[in-house]
Image 1 (cartoon, rainbow, N blue to C red):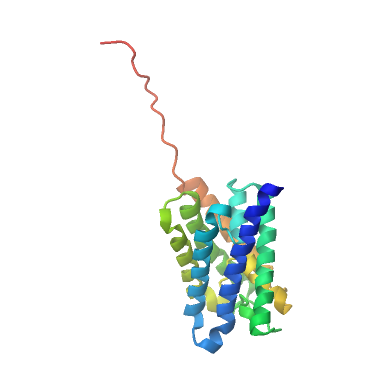
Image 2 (cartoon, one colour):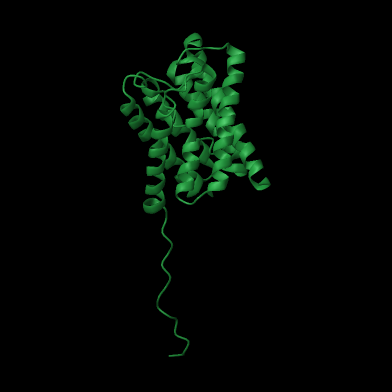
Length: 235
């Protein structure tokens, strides 16, 4: 069990960072004039910091959808994944409650930078579909950078920028969560968990699709061994 505690703690800290900074930017967007651009940049930068600071400890998933996607494709063992998901949810909740203390409590559905948008209440199917597509892009970036190692030292930049671009596109529609823990924290702190399931189903489905596609199709194939035996005799 102890082997899981240190990386799980890293996941808690990383998710806390993402939710506190990201949700905080969302909660203050209306008052500081930053708008969706500031919210997108805050999330992208927070994720980038988490990847560089904690990636060597836990992989810096900071997202249950990412962890589940990696577990489904055998990149993370399920017992470790369970620790990660629990830590991520705790980190998201702690961040939201601290944010409520700092900026003031809110009972509104969209309070505390909650990941809700114009489609959340009006069209659950579209909400799940968009969250699935956005999470697909995010997990593709995670696989390319974190699993296949194709972006080297720019892994954090690549993953953070995907989160930024997704929020720029989908933030006003669904909140562009792509992360059940990111949604869970503010939803719990404001007492509005009724829509949380949308942000579990959509991200998990989209993340799983990306993981299987990258793992089975896009990952580099092992080089074929030379089947021609070398001749040991002299000509």
